[in-house]
Image: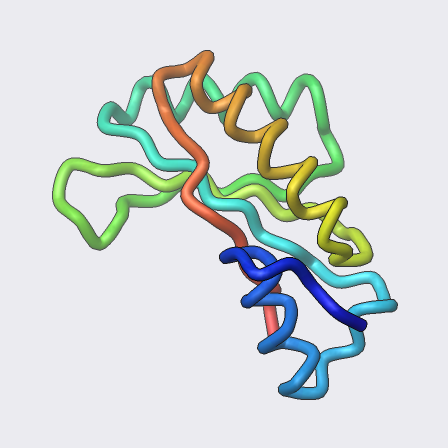
Length: 107
């Protein structure tokens, strides 16, 4: 399986080379960052209503005064699927004055 030469493609390539079966369902975590806890809490409340089965965790970031909202989606981690999901989270986080900060697979 080949992937585009960009950040998402590179991560998927590395996962494949590490032996992760990318044709199976995985818990993929998408990271949203906020400067204000209240903004992060608004996203959490929205997702609990709009996507009640999604696992959503709010916690302080390692960077002072930054808040993380980790959103776990069970999916087959295809390149197109990851890019599309990141775009959705980018738009959603922006509504609450945050931004998408990448993704990862829980190992």
